[in-house]
Image (cartoon, rainbow, N blue to C red; front, side, top):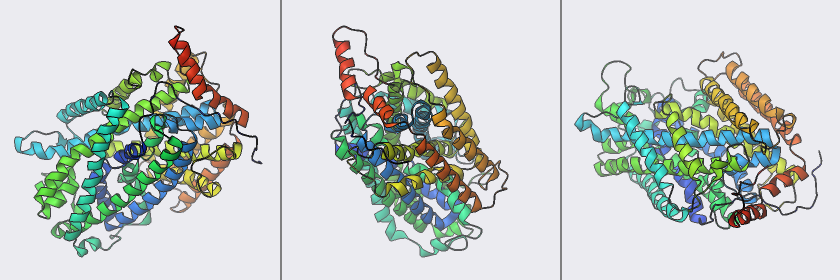
Length: 574
């Protein structure tokens, strides 16, 4: 299909009630504080446990994959700087059904991160409670205790309360926390580089320990929390409605944040492996796990509950170990607080698209979507019950995140085809190649997560569809649902489920499709869906109609009507 060349109208979607008070550093730090969270505290340990020294390769591969996804988001964010961007780009490109689908994926991902960060605080915090025989975390089961649940709820309440600050004050708090969060990993890398043991990089049988295969490498990328650790670069997109000069600042913020994060994570993995006490690795990295029966040795229990801090302590660096245990509160705290912000803005964006009730888009005098923020707190608590540990919840968060990310390359491909002349402050090089590759990357990560995660995610998606469609059925102003144009979404989800069930990444799958062939099938299926979706995108005039319904002009008119005593302004949407 030839690209359409109609001159652009210049209409852009906009937001009402939000205030642009965040500059470049604030935007970059909003992404960075989400990237550098609990992932750096646990990712090195879990990755080494899974594949030994080869974990370094996992971080490098994941860094490259995520950078490709980040570049796609950079172009979209510069074009359409609106709150909850990842939930709204597919809506503009494909209409209602795609908007519902990827919008819900975005919200599901965001709402589950704050509980994960709280779990990280509980795990590291157990160290301080050991001397009092108080238990908020069980190293043998790796689950949070009942008391830990109580503390988690209190911590999430604090996240929510801080989010009611005006953005300019919230931004200052977040920037201060993020400077700390970046400085401590960098300091840790520099110090521990002087305590490396070269023999550790061959512990367990070599750089690739005995029995470790490429299948294990790929499985560790989502399974060991590596992709989870990189999550967060899109936060600047979610807050785009509150960023100054977003066309310039947003792409720089996204790309800069992910590059900083990649360098830090690879460095942390190197020093975690190298600085570990060699006597603990005689039987490989699998020895760094509590036995399933009997009493867990104190040193191993400390490693499970506080991996990087314990390594520093075993190296004789008590001061660094103590500093890291303080950071184990600050880093997850900053990330959890930011994701509460993000969840509220995604809910705001979905209400602007009229998928969620309009009350989600109501803002207080400080420009805070207060109802959406409170719902983020409530539903965050819901996910604590079926997922009682950091590891158990990370898999779901990762898969929901990459499904969210999958919508961006599809939207970019659609906009490039339908609106090639639209101004793009950042233009992705060779987008015709990188955009479908980005979609394949997202599909691969979902597949590597394993069938157990995929079917659980499927249940959450079905429930989400039911709740949203029930609301829209009673809403006469709900957007039109283009079922025929969005048939590819259901084909994609069903196809990924079947491939996962028949593939090599489990548990609960059949292993019928041989390794390597399974990933080839995922790649081919992703390309089929990508080009099916691009050819099903809305015509240009309909895309511009959706943009006009959410344009800054329509927002100003709605606000003017409300200020002159008319009915309370509803969020513009289509």
